[in-house]
Image: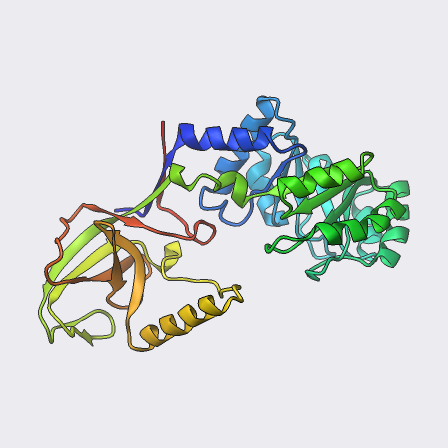
Length: 350
């Protein structure tokens, strides 16, 4: 039985439409696992936004390998966020005019233009994030080449998640003006910050790239469940699992759908620098060392513990004595990180 994502389709679409209508210049982002919803569904949804007259005309993807998956489902421009490199995959000539390339190094633009004369390009300006991008001194001569030999679509800046990037954008605007860019593509700026920028730079178009807030902004529209596949009574001293662990107390062993292949039990390193979060991480580490790890599965509103690390497609969960024992086929609610989870089944429930 599947790890299942059920989407309240009407509620979800209402949020997506409302967000798009309230966000001028919006560029939806569809990358990776499609925020748990798949790239195909997000491409279809972006085409729907376009048909509503929201002004959405461009979809951003993470890599060149993702282009074709959305290109047959969305008819507008496709903006590739990963900077172009000489080893990047060739673009199908049928859709080459729809692709907007990111250029983050001066030496890459002439090489791209050799392969695709008059290519559409966005030049990336380095920010305090320091992931990709050129300095202003590199940006200006590269922009001159882009204006003359390419279709220059503007300048992009990528900021971190903590907010407070408005001052940095303002500091970078001299570089944008020097590059004679008419459009600035940005990420992780609030609606208020964007409004302030538009008020200050009326001759510049600001286009926000948005993924999480657009697709996952109403979590109440999304419901993840796993299926109970087996239940076994467990006495103290019984062995169980791949590693032959010994039960420390009586209870039940619950086998549920969802494992590492789905992203269950896989966790990215935490970026939170607050002291309380670090203390919680240390506490979790101590429990992990003792073989105790809280799972994302819940039964009757209470979190269950992993009996052992998740298997590839199933998880073994420890149910304490006295708790209600679920039936085989019953569904458990699961809390997941959508950007790291793949579902067996996605149901749009209208």
